[in-house]
Image 1 (cartoon, rainbow, N blue to C red):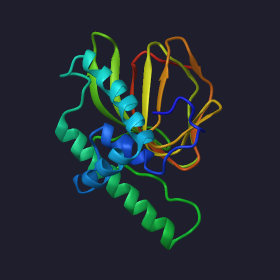
Image 2 (tube, rainbow, N blue to C red):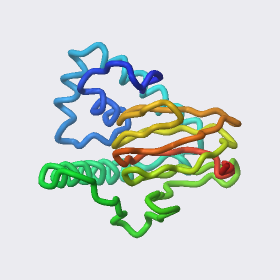
Image 3 (cartoon, rainbow, N blue to C red):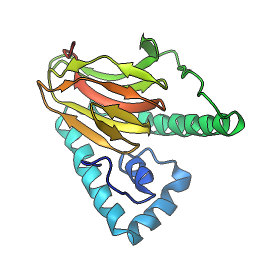
Image 4 (cartoon, one colour):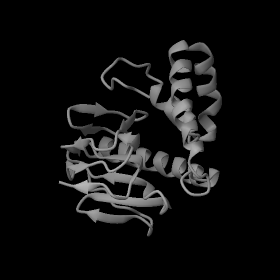
Length: 200
């Protein structure tokens, strides 16, 4: 978690975020645990992330908290996509290919913006979902009807004048406005937000 996205971080910070989210590939767990034991900065980062993630427990667990099997599938999917994008970048430098969902339950909400609904809470008008922006795509300006929580999993994301990297967390309060949300690299995030947000 980073309240100041531009501050210097340990090179392992992205892996610490994946460990806290329980989506680190099992083959990497032992090495990351060993690093955490030796790095006080990463131990603090892990504890900060755990407190945020554990706060989800106050929401209905059968509604908004994804199952263990979903976390495992998400981890495999993110790892596979990251490896594929790295291979494409290494083989063919230049513009990145358009991101396309490979599963039928991804929906293209707008050109270059894909959403995958994880859960809904109709009583509280809240949704949790994966959101993917293709490189160079902007998300429409909007006002938050309720608390919005975002965990960036992959790529880089700009919100207003702040740059977020994998593992970063952002909380936006009700009534706040995101005037500009865009990604130069393309990105994937977990988003828990109000279903009543208003586009500007």
